[in-house]
Length: 291
Image (cartoon, rainbow, N blue to C red; front, side, top):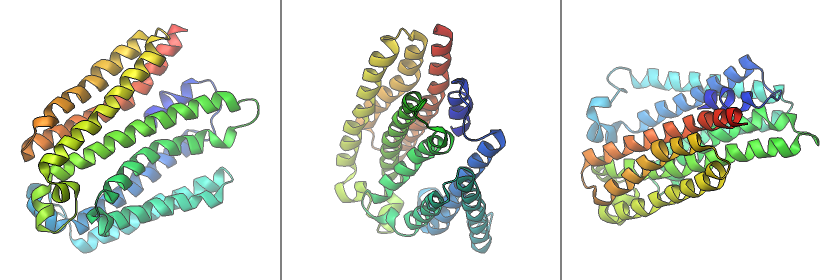
C-alpha cells in the first residue's frame, strides 16, 4: 500500500517529495517491522483462543518457541521504532518519534488486554490501519509545505485522508466479521467481543447496516469526482472492483451464520481493501492521460 501510494500517486505529481527513495524504503521497513511485532505479540497472547479457533494456523509453541517469539518481538520493535526515530530526525521533527513508540505500545496493549474489551480493540486496529496511510503524508508532504504549494499539497493530503477513512471503515467492519468467525474460541476464553455481548444475529445485522456506509460513500465519491470529471475508467474500476464486492458482501452478510461463511466474507473485505488501494494508481493514471 505504501509503495503504491508513493510511486503510483505522489511520485506522479511532479513535485519533489521530502524523502528520497531509500529513505522511503526505510519508512516501509519501519511500518512492516512494527506490524510484524504486533502480529507476534498478538499470537503469543492468543495461543489459547487460536488453539480453538484455528488450530491449523498456530505457530507459537509449534514452529517457534514462545521465548524465541518474544525475542523476535523485541527485535522487530527495535528495528521499527529505531528507524522511526531516524526518519523523524531527518525531517527535523524528532518529537514526532513518540508516534512510533505509541503505535508499538498500542499493539502490545491490544494483544494483552484491549482486545478483550468491547469494540475498543476493533477500533484500535482499524485506526492503526488507517494511520499507516496517513503517515505517508506526514513524512512525504508535511515537511515540504510552504505558502506557494500549500493549496496543492492540501489537495493531495485530503486524498490520503479520504483513503485512510475508507481503510478505517472497511477494517472496522472486517474486525467485526473476524469476531463473528472466532465466536467459539472467544466465548470459551471469556472475551467481550460484540457477538458475545450482543449475540451473533444482532451483530450480523449491525455489520450489514455498517457495510452500507462505504457503499454509499463510494457511489457519491465516484459520481462527484470521477464521473463529473469524465474519469470514466477510474469510475468503472471503483464500481466493478470495489463497490460491487462490497455490495456482494452486504447481501451475503445479512444471512450469514456459519464460521465458513464469515471467513469467506472476511476474505472478500481483504479484496475490497486490495482493490481500493490499487484504485489510487488507476485514478492517477486516468487523470494524467485524460489531461
